[in-house]
Image 1 (cartoon, rainbow, N blue to C red):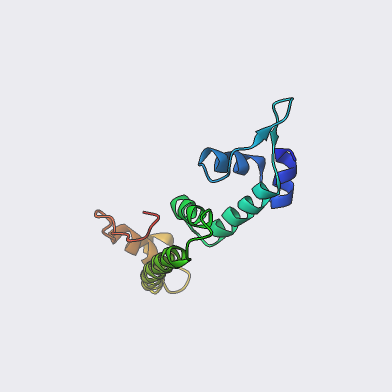
Image 2: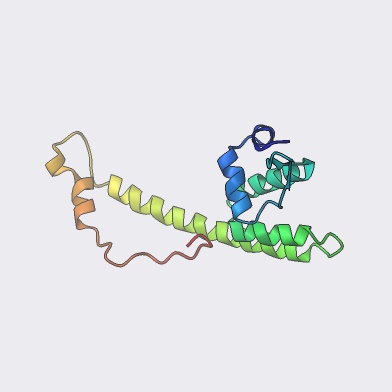
Length: 143
């Protein structure tokens, strides 16, 4: 099948497929006599796997590691479990960061009551007074 057919089956764009090829996440394809890429069911399966991993917010490195582990089916799934455990820890960290962000936004929102002039808005004043000179440390896998 051609790239457009693969994109349609996998519900993504041809650009996404090319990007994953460039990233080394999709295996090489055969070429037709007209030099078109010829995709197979193996590519459909791999692309769905990648897209499902991305839907779970996994990085390309995590996906690459998972693919490497799945390409050695005789091995146990301990490495896969370890990778998922690490990803869960990253998600927990991000949840903590988002809770902190929500608390900051809630505190900011509580500084403004009613409909008043922008110059008197507690939110605007709070934003003007915030000290963000030092970026907050992030501990997620996304950096």
